[in-house]
Image 1 (cartoon, one colour):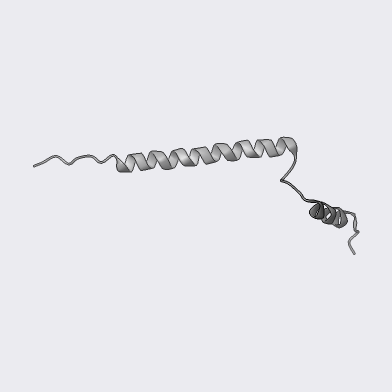
Image 2 (tube, rainbow, N blue to C red; image 1 turned 90 degrees about the vertical axis):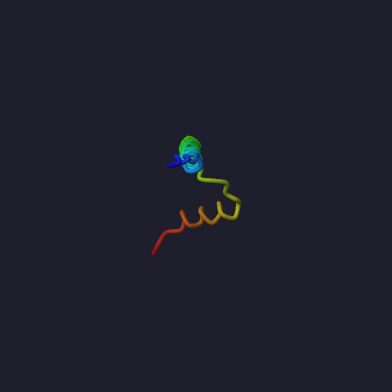
Amino acid sequence: MAEKSKSLLLPMMAVAVFAGLGRMVVQKIKADRAARETRVAGPVDEKTRQWISDVVRTPRQ
């Protein structure tokens, strides 16, 4: 009987997938730390800033 050749495709795909996931996790951790340090969720334009200010200052009934 002939020996079965071992394909490297599946292990290489697994390595690529896990490396990609690991990279995404590291980027998410870095982004969370940066957001926590600056306490800013993202860029806010003037219209949104004014709306937030109005909502916070207006008493609820």
